[in-house]
Image (cartoon, rainbow, N blue to C red; front, side):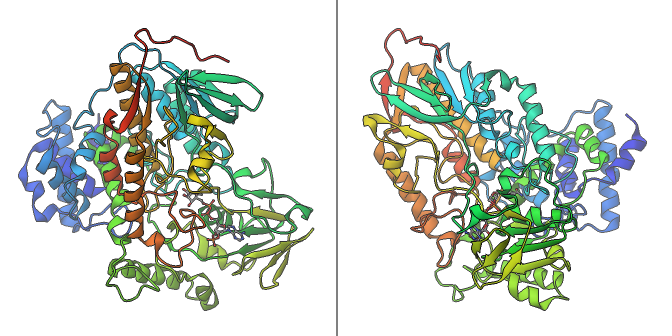
Length: 634
Ligand code: NAP
C-alpha cells in the first residue's frame, strides 16, 4: 500500500487514538510521556486534535506513518496484547484522564486483547424460542448457535429484522450513540456517518442477519400473544396471533423496552380529521410539505422529527410539557471520511482504540456525576457539584444558541437537574424553534378537535397533521403478551402494575427457563450503547444454558431470595441517584416513583455481574437420563 496514501489519510486521524497505537507498534516508552498525553474530551466530543501543539501533532503523525510502514514491512507489533496495569495506562493516555482499573478486563475483551472464556455446549437437544428479531434477538441467535445450540426459532411480528430500527421511520430518525460504538463487538462496519441515520442502521442489521444466516431461524409476521409454562413437561407453549402453537424448553423474550408506542388518552384525539399517528408509526409516503403540523412531546424522537421537517412544513407547533437538557456534539452531523475507513483497515489496533475511547466517553464516564450528594445545598437545580457544573455548561449552550431569542430561553430552560431525563443530542432543535414558521407552546395538550390541537392554557392551533412523539410503554415489560409461569400465575400478577423486576433484569422466580433480553432495570439512563448491555445479557444466558447442558439440567428457576436481594440492591442504588430525586419525571420510573426501566449500575459493573452464571442461584430440575427429544412443534 502506498505511503503517500497513508500520509494523506493520517491527516484525518484521531490523534488520541494514535498514541496507544504507536506504543503497541513500537514498544517505545516515550509515547507514555506527558508530552503525548492528549487533553480529555470536552463533553462527548471526539477531540480529534487531542489538544496537541501543531509541532507535537506533526511528530505523532509522522511517527505513526513510520510505524505502520515498518509493520507492513514485517516488523511485529511490540505489544500486541497489553493487559493489566499496561492496558490501564494506555486507556488513561488515550482518554487523557484517569480510568478506574475495573475497566481493564472489559476493555481487553472488547478490544480483542484477551479471549473471553470459551462456552461450548455438549451435544444437546435444548430447543429455544426467541421472541423478537431486533438487536438482542439477532444477537442471541448468533451467539447461541456459536455455543452449540441450533434448535432455535425466532418469532418476529414484523416482516424483517431490526426491531425498533425497522419500525421507527420518522424523518430524522437515527442513533445518538456513535455508530462505531453502537455496533456489535464482532461485526464492524465502515459507517457512513458518525451518528448513522436509521436507514444505515437498518442496512447494517440486515447485513449482519445475512452474514450470520439469522433469517433461517426466523418466522416473520408472527406475533406472540401468550406463553404458558407447563411444569410437568418443563416446557413453554407459545401461542401466536394466528392461533398457532409452538413449544420449547427455553423462552427468550427479546422484545425491547421501546417497543409499544404510548398513545396518550387526549380527549378528542380520535375525532381529528387528518393524519394522527405516533412517531413509531410514521405513515409511509406521507408528505408534510406545505402542511400545518403539531408535534406533541419533546423527547428524543421529537428532537429528531422537528428539525427534520421544520423547513418543509408551512407551520409547525411543538407542544412541550417539559423542556429538555440538550448537548451538542462536534461530529453529530459529520460523514465519516473514506480516509478514516482506510485508517481503520490499515493501522493495527486503530479501530479498537477508537472504539475504546468512545466506550469510555459515552458509556460510564458520567455515571459518578449522577449520584446524589446528601450534603449538596442546591437540590432544587442539581444533585451534586459536578451535576451543577453540567447545568452551567448546558445552560450556556442554550443561551448561546438562543442569544437573539430571550423569550425562547425562558421557555426551554429546564428546572430539573441535567440527566434527570435522557440527555439529548442537539439535532438542530434550537435553530428549528427560532424559525418563523415554528411555534413552541409550553403546555401539555388538553384536547384535540377535528382540526385543532388545544393546549392546557387554551392555546389552540389549527393543523393538518398531528404527530404523537409521546414515547413508549417502557414500564410494561412484555406487554401486551400474557406470560404464565408456575402455578398458573401470570407475570402481570407477579410484578404488579408497571413494576417489573428480575434478577439481572433477565429472569424472574416462578418463570423457569425464561430469560429476558433488554428486561427490567437494564436500559441505559446514563448513556452508552445498549448493544454492550445486550452482549452482556446474551453471554450470561449462553453461559447458563451451556452449564445446564453440561450438567444435564432441564430447567432452572432463580431462587426467590436471590432475585429479591438483587432487586433490593437495584432499588437502593437508584435511591442514591438523580432519577429518584424529587420532581423527576421520565420514562425510567413508574407512577409510584420506582425506577423500573434503567440500570443504576455502570455498564462495567453489569458486565462483571453477568460474566458467568452460577447454578447455585437457581433451583435446578434434572433432566431424565435420556433427555426428551421433542422438536419445536407447531
Ligand atoms: P420520550 O422520551 O418518552 O418522550 C415523550 C415526550 O412526550 C416527552 O416530552 C413527554 O413529556 C411527552 N408526552 C408524553 N405524554 C404526553 C401527553 N399526554 N401530553 C403532552 N406531552 C406528552 O419518548 P421518545 O422521544 O420517543 O424517546 C424514548 C426513548 O427512545 C429515548 O429516551 C431514547 O432512549 C430512545 N430514542 C432514541 C433516539 C436516538 O437514539 N436518537 C431517538 C428516539 C428515541 P414529559 O417529559 O413531560 O413526560
